[in-house]
Length: 446
Image (cartoon, rainbow, N blue to C red; front, side, top):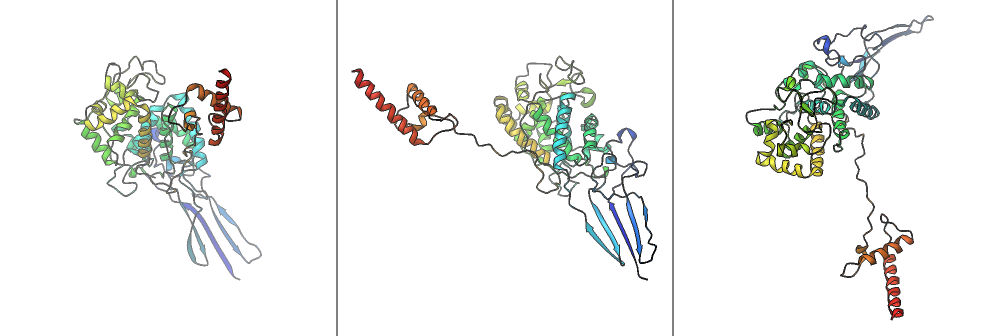
């Protein structure tokens, strides 16, 4: 009797890493895979059928998943690869069948996560540290390295303990703890996207410009893929201007972007126990909000505006922090051009900052889909043409105010409005009527 055996296994690829200390279990990968951690996480089915009268069915539970695993809330610390293969054995032959395509992050979950981040910012006043988290994940990018993830950049590697221990990242574990519940809730959002989403929303919610962001960043899967220490800028190097250029030029950024991004120090405080810079507290920080203490760059350190540049330029308040890398913005001739401009023109600062922030957030990222995912509508809105009476004058002389008022009255009387101009012939007719009435009035008066 002929007999057919069919074995179907659906297994995700797993990247193993070193075990991290318990205190970092929420953020670092490397925990051993066990059914105790997630007893129902994975399953495989073995089915045997034959032409005999008593077919048998045997099934068992194993550590494999039929779902497309990205970063499940229960096993996100395992950091599984975001891919799977379905291997079929039938009649002695093997074939690999690609799984249904799924993007790095789910667009709907990104939108929902955005709202949860806004609520987190309203309750925890954590705008500055969220911006710093996004910056430090992206700021490791090396423009001279093509391979991903060796080139660094926005790839979610900052969630691993080995990178969190870099001196420049002191205190950022607090930001990860705040975001972890949101990551658990929205497992379809990668860490890389979550970090950059939180950073951009923090700027906007603090009163800053809208950042033209895109998402779909792929996460690295193991701590071995973290960049080496030393790629982020220092606060007090011997030659601040040279140091800033060395770091930011390596990322592919220019002087304008260096100065614009520095303007984000309008938010936040420096804590001496973390960075070695600043006072333990000042009149602006002793009462919070949030945890009190530290020294801020500006008096209103939770408001995003151009006061950072104004305060550095004036240096009138000893309670406001000025680091060597801040002061050099008004000392270096190239930096000074932009710093002076931003101190005088907040709109120009907002425009350049939004572009620089978006550029930084994309550095080194591998996007899936390649074009990224946009969850905001940035298409320009067409503004209605404003009513300007003088625009419809065919003479060389400007219309008098009284004539403008008469034209406007007639214009609105026949259904027009300042935001909805009527065709030009209406105005010509109105002007002719008014001119005739004016002549008749003059003749009758005489």
